[in-house]
Every structure is written in C-alpha cells, then in structure tokens.
Amino acid sequence: PDLKGVSDGWNFGLADPQVFVLSMPSRVTRRQRFKQQLETLCLSADLNWAPALDGAQIPPELRWMNGFVDTKAWDYPRPGNWACYASHLAILRQAHATCPNCDVVVFEDDI
Image (tube, rainbow, N blue to C red; front, side, top):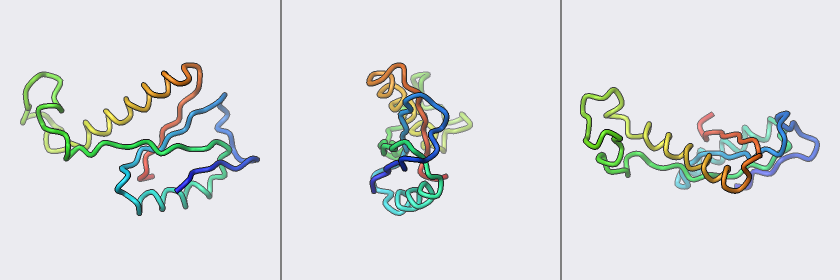
C-alpha cells in the first residue's frame, strides 16, 4: 500500500527527510497494519517501503565477519539480526547516495 504524507501533518522537525519503512515484501498483513497505524500519526512526509532481507535465506557463512560460522556467538540462532543490520545499512547507503544532506528516518514494519 502507498504511504503518502498529509499536507498539514507533522514534519519530524527535520529538513528534507527521507523516510523508509523496512519490510519484507511478502509480509502483506504487516504492511497493511503498519499503514493503518501510520495514518493515525498524520505525518507530512511520504514514506517509502524498503525491502528487508530474510535472515533465514542468508547462508550462515555470509553472516559472520570473522570468516567462519561461529556457533558460540550469542546471536548464532538468530539470523534475523544480521539481516536487520544489512537492511538498515542498505537504506543508509541508498539515502547517502541519493541525498547526502538529507535527514533519514527508518521505521520497521513491526512497530
């Protein structure tokens, strides 16, 4: 669903914000619920869906910066942690590339 701002809505107090919502495209119900909650906030900025990665789809050997699968790490059984980090990083890189002086706001679809 589109995430359009309200012309006289709240503007975050930021200059030219880029606003993103991390969400897996397959999570239709979450997106609809987020849109309903968002409408109660009356924000002035348009929001853009940003595709979130699914941690379960990332091979374990790509989730570890130390070069090996660390089964003793606290987040070993939580592949979503890496996916969340990578998804946020992708948004920041995109935002900086398209508007390095803009403010960035990132929501997640599970608020």
